[in-house]
Length: 319
Length: 260
Ligand SMILES: Nc1ncnc2c1ncn2[C@@H]1O[C@H](COP(=O)(O)OP(=O)(O)OP(=O)(O)O)[C@@H](O)[C@H]1O
Ligand SMILES: [Mg+2]
Image (cartoon, rainbow over the protein chains, first blue to last red):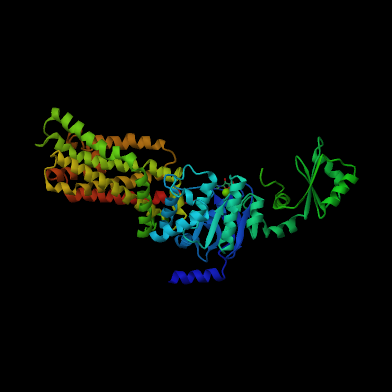
């Protein structure tokens, strides 16, 4: 009874995740370096960042399996140190590394996991069947987990994370290592969850994933949050509507940057190509040619989060 | 110290047990030989074969004398076997404990759930073994009916500290040390095959340390209807204290391993 009441209260107003000055240290190495967060009910929130940015460390603190070194953290309005058990009862977690039971069948994996949350057996069976439909694994229900493909295992892990009907779902790199088709299937499923009003928090280093799924995201680098906003707002703030990618045969992009001073809003020479940020890509291209430069290839495209990331950190996201 | 104060809830403990039994239902065939067939073969070869040359010990046939010992040793070895690789595996390879960690299941539930699972496995093996022993006419007292309970206690007293040990190591090479310096010497010298009294007086206390010896003596007292060397309460208390200390160690070791 009282649990049901508490649930209604938290869902209505408070942020589901609230962090101020959150720090995680391993020995004298600082993995998360004082971050502030607030995630509202129903939001799809993303952490975008390169390897080692501190995304998983943050997710594990939110999931109440890793204790913050310092700072304030409240999940579902509760304190992870004191109320870890109660918080975890209402979370669904898809960890970065799959930890399915390889010797159990697909369905048994869902059933045993449901029991960890105290879901009654009959209800667990009902949910397992429903979730297997949802992630399109119903035809593999009786098969062992070991021989499943990476994408199927990932889908099963996501189904498992839903088995307690969680208020908050944490997905750590849900699609890393999957082929494009498997990724699109997963995105579609996650999108459905989002439409149902499930609060999603995910990490990724794929900017297209972040753009597609997240209402709001933070860019993390070196344990810090370097930018925050909706994908569109981030692009508007930190990039230009269009980007021109120029490649030159033998000449080093850095040597040519000088000749392009004043073209577009900003020039970024990368090792293999030169990026020109501009409101109008075609106009910028025309200007490049007018200055007598003859790039071997020209690509005009819309700005993406990749450009935002490059601008903020000076590095590309996926290497 | 805070780690010692882990929570144990009946619901979560039973959920862990349920998972282990589900796994066992899938894998039981692999364990039939070591849990049921091997102990019986042991009994036949040593009890009848060697027994033919040894004659009686303390007025009973060698077979009747080692039945309770082999029974306790089976419980002991099952506990060691089930609490080494499977435990390390659930931390390191399949990460099953990490999966539980993300749910309301606490370290204490993981330990207690698995101990219950071991207990069930050992009880089944002990009852089967008791039945076979009865067929061979190796039981001399109705007290033999309590031996499965003694075996259960031996299993808990062995399993709890072994789980703690396995939760504390990062590599399975440590198990070779455990087998070589604890399990095999215990099995050989804790009164299973010959009376501890035949050991040199200086090493005898080592046998008393092993939970197996207390189990062997209680089982033997039960099947032969004779008094054990120490008061029954003292043997039982030793096993219970060993279990309790092992569980505290295991709570601590699991908590440590799962936290960062
Ligand atoms: N248990 C740990 N002990 C020591 N260092 C750790 C531990 N976990 C993470 N780290 C370090 O903290 C830093 C951040 O790691 P984290 O896993 O949070 O990054 P990430 O953003 O998730 O990266 P990836 O994209 O590779 O998953 C890394 O340098 C990592 O080596
Ligand atoms: Mg990570």
